Image (cartoon, rainbow, N blue to C red; front, side):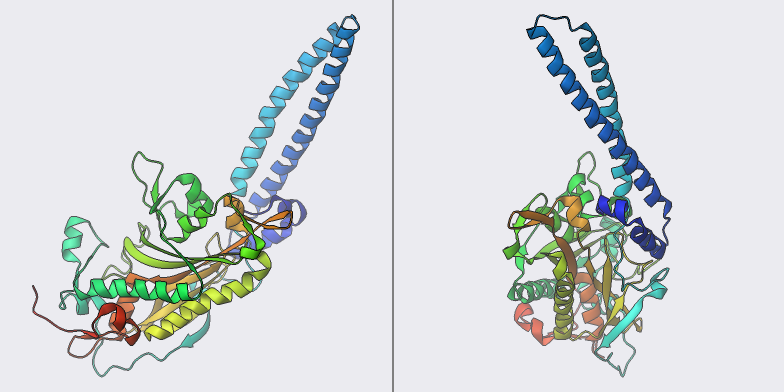
Amino acid sequence: MLDINLFRERPDIIKKSQIARGLPTDIVDWIVNLDGEWRAAQKELDNLRHELNLCSKKINQLKKAGKPAKQELELAKELSKKISDLEKRVVELKGKRDELLWQIPNILDPDVPVGKDERDNKELKKVGKPRKFDFEPKHHQDLLVPLNCLDIEQAAKVSGARFYYLKNQLVKLNLALISFGIDFLTKKGLKLIQPPYMLNKTALSGAIHFTAFEDAIYKIQDEDLYLIATAEHPVVAYMADKVVPKENLPLRFVGISPCFRKEAGAHGKDTKGIFRVHQFEKVEQVSFCEPSEVKKEFDFLLKNSEQMLKALGIPYRLLFLCSGDTGKQAAKTIDFEGWFPSQNKYRELGSCSNLNDYQARRLNIKYSDGGKQSFVATLNNTGIATERTLACLVENNQQKDGSIKIPKVLWKYTGFKTIEPKAKA
């Protein structure tokens, strides 16, 4: 949520961001007008309350003096009625204003490239050279099914499309990625946290732009609960209504959780394998810092992801998302994409986002500096989204005989160096 003072003082900044996102600007004017009406009504209400207070004092004085106060009593009754009506109006105006205020996306950072969609995203760099195969590289599903490590068909029967069974050594490889991510990030000073896998609507609405996510998240029937789409949401909600001493910033967490997404609108996209699924695990980085430290913190989180990708030997590239492709909560997002040999292209493995104080305002997360309290800035970045990373690792490390080499950094977690072809059980 944006600061209402920005609408009062610099609505042009908000409109500029709306235009860059390809969104209408008239909503900004509606908020400014409603806020003006609310402030005027609030001022009138304060004046009426003051007038009633003076009238009440005069009534008391007249009664003590034994004098009639009929005129003053009638005025007090009239003022009370006006105050009651105006209080309802003030609440109504503020409710309408705030409802629109919550719909406004974050203001984009000035360096975000302007564009309509993913075709306008800006490539920042490529790291690592894609491997040259002396055979036709296979899709990860075509590799893993014969290895008795993945079963898509049975999952489809019992759960539906975009579900899976990980089996045998692939389960260990999945857990190895999680353990690797946790160890790497905790050594960087991030605090380990395992959050609840469900949130109520109030907490979730504070963490996300609810209308943008509503079609993507699973609702628990007859409960005020939703399955989380990422550990970021409950980790950010963990700090709701808290005040952090300035000396404790930046406060950094590494959250580990399963994630659940409907993948609405993804019909016909990535239907094969475990790249785009309804359920996956993720190691997530979340940071709370002073607004003045956002750039430094963003670079820190992104560097962590780059170092993990390098350690895993995954060729990758960084993409600066354009204004039309940046999420409503984010002021800036950089995606990192891994190379998928079977598709001969880079695909998204995660993203690093700066939200400034947008999320903190919605959840009332502040820091204290002496006697002054201010909203923190929040940032998040995928550590490792394991199913997508599994798919990427498997494809890049496949061998001609159908076996898969395990990156050396994971050996101590897996207990094996390769996944070898075996007879199907």
